[in-house]
Image 1 (tube, rainbow, N blue to C red):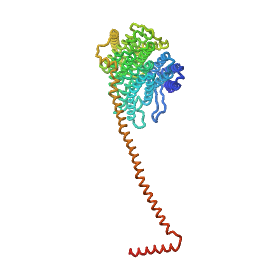
Image 2 (spheres, rainbow, N blue to C red):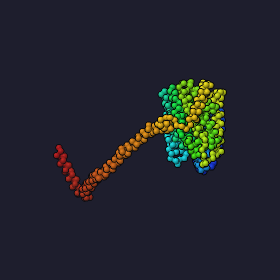
Image 3 (cartoon, one colour):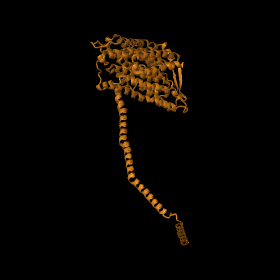
Image 4 (tube, one colour):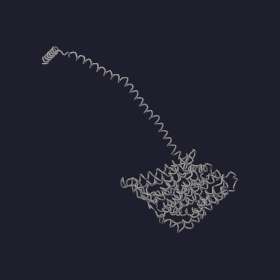
Length: 619
């Protein structure tokens, strides 16, 4: 059983590293290798989801490396591998032969493998390993076209923002260790054991996990990094921002639900942060004129519902939302990428009639957008109501906030559809979308329809049993009707409003279009003070430390010269005088040494005479 789990994570990781090492020489074979690996990984994930394997390997003394697949991680592993396969199918048809295919497909596999490590990790250290590799490969994928400075700058912004939030996991791991029974007791680092920590460590663990999860999932106040991440290739956006990186934080919150509940405050903070993100980023999505920016803001908003579900304890609803969102959002990003390739733009006014020009892509895009809008009988309509039932059980105000976010979902989805379905304009320079890039979109469109089934009994009850959660709130019929009616009303209103601007103050509209000014606020509150502190430290180093070191060196040189000129001369003179006196004494001492006995006798007589006189005088 452990071999199955090791193979699941090692296969994409190993293949990804191999493609990266071989480089351009593997460009031709890279798509085929990546697809074969993705198909194998999907098969292994499905098998693991049924068998629930676990794996263990030595790591540190008393702290083994542990991976496990349970209900939640099994569903996530299947979702990740399925979306990865579809995105790679699209990429194999879309990416030209002149691109660095081995680097692209290698990074995509490495990213998917690190996500699989993240969702199957049973302890914080293993989770951190997958989490860190996932962040590093996302940076490389967003900045894939590294010769463009704007793209590399966007990758840096995304990486540094999420990296800052990731420090929360290190805080959580340190607090978990500190809460252990002894210096060699690592059981407290188990994800299932975090909720058993005592205060104040429990609050530190909760805060660290929440901050890291909100940062990775682009929730308030970290949402702006997802706007920058849109500089990457569309397949990257489809994978990173539908079923993998941005949902990793939501997954972590769903996984650590007992920790949020045990803290006494974590669940409320998480639930209301998710609700606020769903509303505010929904307004941001409505204000966008760029399709990928609209989809990015909608990702933040839709993941806000998953975060709300984690805080409200609606694990089943949050999981259903996560899976349904993965299908819909990956389809929307891939369609946007297909139009970008064919039409050379992603600006909504320039995409007028795009769906009419490419009917199959337009139809698939419409299915996903209507699902995102929450219209029946599509998947996100029902999944959202399942999680909102948990919000209603916790607080009517939280439920109302969730409905407001759902209302806005219909508005920005209908806005996107209005532009792409308007009467087509002449496009003589439009390029053909490869057939191989179209049918993965059709598969995802079918998934958007089929995934409505798990939101209703008896399949929903089976999902709850698989997730090992009980007492999950079930929505009433009127909740389905209410959300569907609101979505229809919002979509109809948005369609009727069309491209007219909203009667709002220019500052308000620009604020939402600029993602609430979150990036500027981050620069003002964090980046600018950090840079000022760095400049002050550099100035102190240059003007104080460097000068002190240089002054000390100069003084030492001057002291050495003075020593050489004065002290050395005096010492040399003293030594010379002692040597001269010694030589003089030696010459005087040699004079009595004549070798004649009568002189020695005379010298002895004189010496005894002097001695006798001294003795007489002393007495």
